[in-house]
Image (cartoon, rainbow, N blue to C red; front, side, top):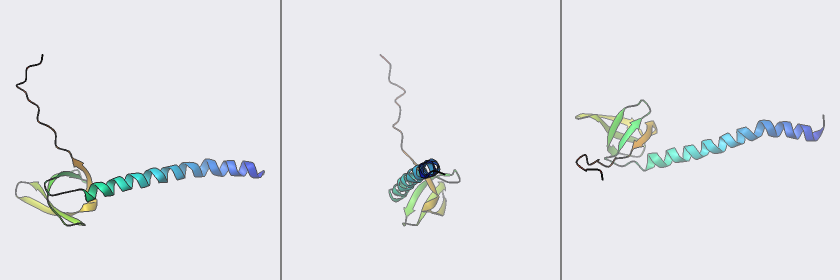
Length: 96
Protein backbone atom coordinates (compact mmCIF):
# COMPACT_ATOMS: atom_id res chain seq x y z
CA UNK A 1 0.00 0.00 0.00
CA UNK A 2 1.21 3.46 -0.75
CA UNK A 3 1.93 5.74 2.19
CA UNK A 4 -0.30 8.51 0.83
CA UNK A 5 -3.29 6.18 0.61
CA UNK A 6 -2.67 4.98 4.17
CA UNK A 7 -2.54 8.59 5.42
CA UNK A 8 -5.81 9.43 3.62
CA UNK A 9 -7.57 6.40 5.09
CA UNK A 10 -6.34 7.26 8.61
CA UNK A 11 -7.45 10.88 8.17
CA UNK A 12 -10.93 9.77 7.10
CA UNK A 13 -11.35 7.79 10.31
CA UNK A 14 -9.57 10.12 12.75
CA UNK A 15 -10.90 13.49 11.60
CA UNK A 16 -14.55 12.89 12.61
CA UNK A 17 -13.41 11.61 16.02
CA UNK A 18 -11.29 14.69 16.62
CA UNK A 19 -14.12 17.02 15.59
CA UNK A 20 -16.60 15.21 17.88
CA UNK A 21 -14.20 15.47 20.81
CA UNK A 22 -13.88 19.24 20.29
CA UNK A 23 -17.66 19.66 20.29
CA UNK A 24 -18.02 17.46 23.35
CA UNK A 25 -15.43 19.46 25.30
CA UNK A 26 -17.18 22.70 24.35
CA UNK A 27 -20.56 21.36 25.50
CA UNK A 28 -19.04 20.08 28.77
CA UNK A 29 -17.56 23.53 29.46
CA UNK A 30 -20.99 25.13 28.88
CA UNK A 31 -22.65 22.69 31.29
CA UNK A 32 -20.01 23.34 33.95
CA UNK A 33 -20.47 27.10 33.57
CA UNK A 34 -24.25 26.67 33.94
CA UNK A 35 -23.85 24.60 37.10
CA UNK A 36 -21.52 27.17 38.65
CA UNK A 37 -23.87 30.05 37.85
CA UNK A 38 -26.83 28.60 39.76
CA UNK A 39 -27.99 30.83 42.61
CA UNK A 40 -30.74 30.45 45.23
CA UNK A 41 -34.07 31.40 43.69
CA UNK A 42 -33.22 30.05 40.23
CA UNK A 43 -35.62 27.62 38.63
CA UNK A 44 -33.99 24.48 37.21
CA UNK A 45 -34.86 21.22 35.49
CA UNK A 46 -32.91 18.18 36.66
CA UNK A 47 -31.94 15.17 34.55
CA UNK A 48 -35.05 13.30 35.70
CA UNK A 49 -37.25 16.11 34.36
CA UNK A 50 -38.32 17.58 37.71
CA UNK A 51 -38.81 21.34 37.79
CA UNK A 52 -37.55 22.83 41.03
CA UNK A 53 -36.52 26.07 42.70
CA UNK A 54 -33.04 26.28 44.22
CA UNK A 55 -33.20 27.09 47.93
CA UNK A 56 -29.54 26.64 48.85
CA UNK A 57 -26.41 25.90 46.78
CA UNK A 58 -23.29 24.45 48.44
CA UNK A 59 -21.00 23.74 45.49
CA UNK A 60 -21.44 19.98 44.95
CA UNK A 61 -24.96 19.71 46.40
CA UNK A 62 -28.01 21.91 46.51
CA UNK A 63 -31.31 22.03 48.34
CA UNK A 64 -34.18 22.36 45.90
CA UNK A 65 -37.90 22.81 46.46
CA UNK A 66 -40.02 20.57 44.24
CA UNK A 67 -43.36 21.76 45.62
CA UNK A 68 -44.35 24.10 48.44
CA UNK A 69 -42.96 22.51 51.60
CA UNK A 70 -41.18 19.67 49.74
CA UNK A 71 -37.41 20.25 49.65
CA UNK A 72 -34.81 17.66 48.66
CA UNK A 73 -31.04 17.59 48.40
CA UNK A 74 -29.55 16.81 45.00
CA UNK A 75 -26.13 16.83 43.37
CA UNK A 76 -25.25 19.82 41.23
CA UNK A 77 -24.32 17.35 38.47
CA UNK A 78 -28.02 16.50 38.17
CA UNK A 79 -28.93 19.92 36.75
CA UNK A 80 -29.87 19.69 33.08
CA UNK A 81 -30.84 23.31 32.43
CA UNK A 82 -31.88 26.55 34.07
CA UNK A 83 -35.31 27.99 33.32
CA UNK A 84 -35.05 31.64 32.40
CA UNK A 85 -37.88 33.82 33.73
CA UNK A 86 -40.26 35.03 31.05
CA UNK A 87 -41.54 38.58 30.95
CA UNK A 88 -45.25 38.85 31.76
CA UNK A 89 -47.49 39.56 28.79
CA UNK A 90 -49.89 42.48 29.15
CA UNK A 91 -53.23 41.06 27.98
CA UNK A 92 -54.98 44.44 28.38
CA UNK A 93 -52.91 46.08 25.66
CA UNK A 94 -54.91 46.88 22.55
CA UNK A 95 -53.09 46.25 19.24
CA UNK A 96 -52.78 49.24 16.88
